[in-house]
Amino acid sequence: MKYDVIYIDPPYWYQGQTQHGGRGSAWTSGAHVHYPTMSERQLAALPLPELYAKDCIMFCWTTGPQLEVTMRLLSAWKMRFKTVAFVWDKVQVNPGAYTMSQCEYVIAATKGKIPAPRGARNVRQYLREKRTTHSVKPEQVRSAIDSMFPTQRKIELFARVSAPGWDRWGFDAPPGDGLVSLPFERTNKCEK
Image (tube, rainbow, N blue to C red; front, side, top):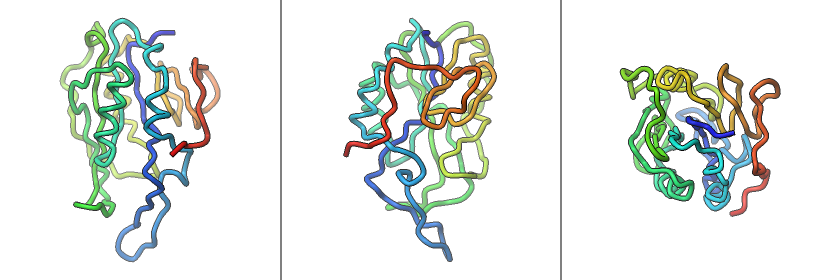
């Protein structure tokens, strides 16, 4: 199956880093403790172009420390960077190496043109929603993508929930309608 819209939250490897929970809290575990992560090389090797319709848009989650990696991944996946589609203010902060980390980003990239027909064009870039469980993203982003591309074929990669009208694939993807098998495998071991 070819898709017009791809929504992806790559399981980036953060070199085994941990995070501090904030004043009065202990150190918390990093991404690698919550789910299997993948190295940049492993992510770049995913044959995502096999999923693209002639005109395809990708919405890719990233964080400040992974921006440069994300740009290289987009190139490896034959996608062309367009803009920062969404900025998520998670309300709570994490200590960062330079400033307090509070936002995540969704990068928009395309192969070909923006899929037509278009839906809503007045979707806001900025959203403020308190973070919950580690790496769980706000449903508001997927809903916004649905409103912008209501009739297109959509897939979420590295999915954790099911959503009407979306196919899904990933380590934590729940079974049921919309769960797809793809021409590549998800590894459980990050090669460093």
